[in-house]
Length: 351
Image 1 (cartoon, rainbow, N blue to C red):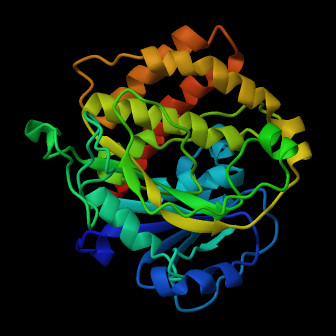
Image 2 (image 1 turned 30 degrees about the vertical axis):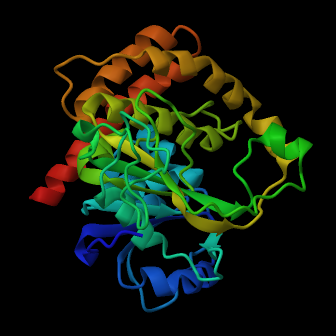
């Protein structure tokens, strides 16, 4: 791993609390996150009191805090389930945000050493990405590698990396149909590599283990995709997929890069795939239909920030997808509402 300086005051660790007792989870992570500021957001649907052990620097938010901050029940409803993590993104004041789900523990590398998720994510974000020409030795800024013969020297300086997508061992992030067909299949393969996702290439982003540059793309990490107002479907399983496509096309337009690979976490098994299949099939189908939209989306030259891009994207979503399904009209509205809340919170933080 390349050596980069890690400033504690630059980093927030965001944790969405879906379970009420975080004692074991936080104790497992203590060696790596205790020196950083934590933002823990309780799932608004969780009724039990969340237990947090001593010795952590924590800002804790629950349903009443969400409602008080966003000032709208329609917007606050976007933060249920694992989408409560987005409220943590909203409340952060740091340059870098690292998000880890509460069903994950530190993984071990091939030498049996625990993986320092924070150090690897920050290394990914603080070293350039190379989205415009693929390096066959993957990330040339990792320790022990470099650019290969034939890589254009004019492109070797790279571009800022704004999103680091970590992976996980044990429970792979399969969709419900795949889990139902292969219930015993797990991911045991630790691949010691980081790569830049090429420009104009989409990818499924999972919010389970990610980090991003909040200053450059924070507004693009947004909750906006809810399948049904009555909460009939597990829309949160599609939330990060939708958000991932949003942030990737915005990063491409702004000339930023996205990396995937290290660091790994160990993900515990949770949930029943058959039950999930019954709930999320509509979201899986809709995601198939929106891929061409993101592949063909073009922003104007006037869109020079992530916020500008989200505004233009909301208009395009409403005009091009809104007629297909009401969920997209709601998503477009939620995007604009998110920006209003983002700017309101940011102005309060500055003042």
